[in-house]
Image (tube, rainbow, N blue to C red):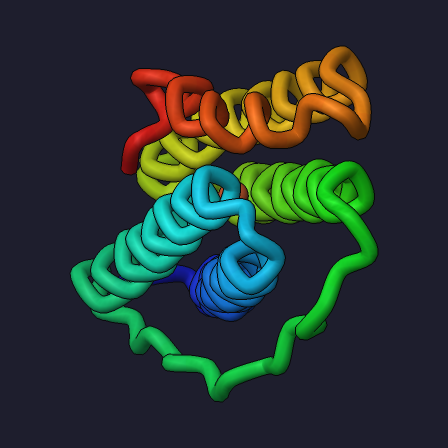
Length: 166
Ligand code: FEO
């Protein structure tokens, strides 16, 4: 039986992963309307990954005799000023998610739930990759500057790291 505090914080994470999926979907849609089909493709894939993260949590909570709560939809912003600002927002959001995963680790330790502590390590590792991948994109954007956004858009899909596909 899942410890109540652990169940609660995992359900909070379900909401956050769901919001991440919606946020990246909104960014993808905006990028598409701005003509950045490569960036849109990257973000659509990222949005799908976030949904998988949410499902992973739902499955785990239920498997451990808890009850996963499926969140209502929280509306993400609809428009973004430009690509650099949007990817800064991606990195900021991923840092927020990392802090939130670390909080789950802390609650698992407090509650001596070593099973969930072990299980959540996948997310700890995933966050290293998610932050690194957002940082790589920001570095690349700084390098190409405003004039080469076409090339950046063409190449961004090749920047999806092998470890960042689920
Ligand atoms: Fe599921 Fe990007 O954190």
